[in-house]
Length: 325
Image: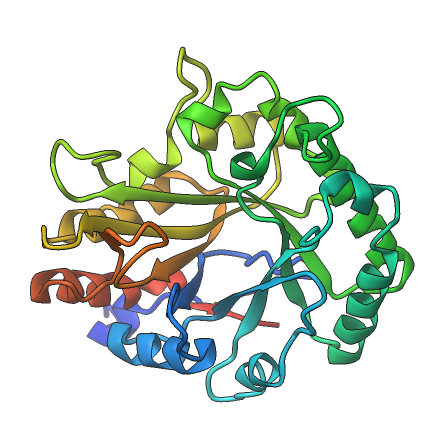
């Protein structure tokens, strides 16, 4: 006799657990950064975004600079909710008020050590991005303190010092912009600080939903941008040059200009098929805001009713059934 399988059992997907570097055994970790470029509390906006999207965003992405004391009480509280397990993704512009070369020379060691003490006391595994999107901050002039090689030296110094201080719960992410303009620069290759100090390779990338507008496309387009003049697309570069490193899409979204409301469904519908073809991607973190830093782009999931429905369908996909362990 043939066994009868219930519909629920037939579509059930395994729950994938994370390892010491927060890499899931299967599936993709789901995250969010909500309330960007507003004065609203990030924890409140994150919870509101979860309610809107219909899924707990396991990765809670926040941003800090300089000597700001973090993780904050609110961030810690967000990871203490047993019913909604979350992990922090802390973005730190460590060289704020200084420069990369000075950090690399040890001039901000007190800043590093203070963070090391706080994160050790916190105790839980935590993603850390040092100066996300460094391409935009590079000043290639010799001696500027902001050369690409200075970034790599700053990154190496900081991670090695954190490790020496016993901050073994930090999982670091090297987060690029992946923009074709910057990837074509002669100094772009000098940004990478070395496989020994990079746990994950990150990408902050967006696409337009307005046909004919800057960076129009779907999820594949934000992953595959090539340097101007030709070369490997970002995903291919990461998986070829740094084989075995998990990839985090640390910021992503579809945008339209303010006043040019356009359906974003095509972008959201394209995500899961691409993830299934790209096993190196182990986490995606949506950046949600009604107005970007330039003041003219809407990257929210609910700018149209149809787009929100598509995003909720995306969020419900079992590929994101990842359990923190």
